Length: 475
Image 1 (cartoon, rainbow, N blue to C red):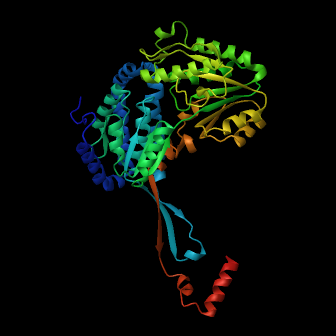
Image 2: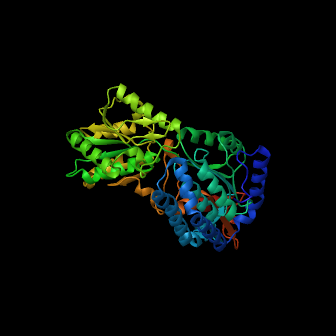
Image 3: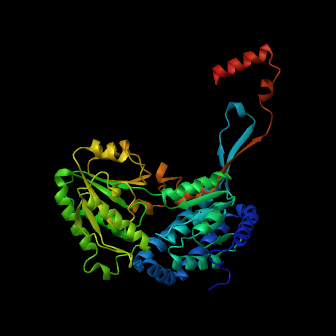
């Protein structure tokens, strides 16, 4: 273990000194060439690959994340992100000429992309490496210095991530601070130039209030209840399997996991049976012994999910599959609920676990009203072969992002903007969209020779008044 890793929950003086070092370095970092920025990204991935087994072990200890999923959903995602950023970075950094128009004759105008300065990235525990390093890649590409705050819930992974960061970066470029709520609160008191937060809407509001004190810009990647709308399809087998996989992957601890499914009322029984079989097929045998099925990150999260299920059942919901919860072992069984009371908490709160409510509908109007009466979701999923149906849903229901005939996969794209709207977030990440979040676009104007501007300065003689009038009519 490197000696450069800062202590966990350091005192305020250490945090302030780390911030000051980042602030002092920011002007130099802003002027790094594309080549120098890429060199840092290559070094980051090299160290991630070197610590691949350590990351797998840490995430298994934290919440029994399967090693294969560490490769697929953590390491591969960062590799792909770095590759996409390196491909486009030189072009993104170039000054962009813009037209001036008749009023600016004799001048030129362009836009410079410049780093915002010192950025704070606060990452969650559900993807403890990916959701820390993906925005870090964007911040480094933009030329920012960065303070990182991993989640204390996945402490083993946070330690490995801290060691990776300290091995790759000078602490005046990137500093990582470990700790809990008190540490996060201290960080939010500092005058950062940009804050990138991934987490719950409730904490996102706290981050926004803190940012307003300085003020600084924010990117909020939040969550909410992402609905699935299933059309009257000829076959439901493929659809059910995709939905089951998206719901149970990472034990449902995904901000864009399907949170509830709408199914035509006359296809209800068929869909429920097909969905149940798909879940069993994905995770066969005794689930508590299945190495592929992940645990919930902490006992209180497992208890919260169990309470949502109990509330729904007590209100008359049908428990079609699963329902078992072991808070001591952070284990929640894949669960399907139907016939749910509209006032049940599970239809109001984000589940963030392997529990899937199924709601029937007779008309699309019912579905649209139900979704639009609630905060804007982070993702919207539509399963249909009818273009008209798809266009109508997209036109009537807002969401941060949308995916047609699949779930969750859209998040892996380095070309699509990923972000929420309203309660589900502000701003976007991934690829060039992430680069833009950490970048200030500075407009620059240069006067080469005097144009007609002097003719329009006071005093306003009758002749100048006529000239202004003619210009307004002509332009």
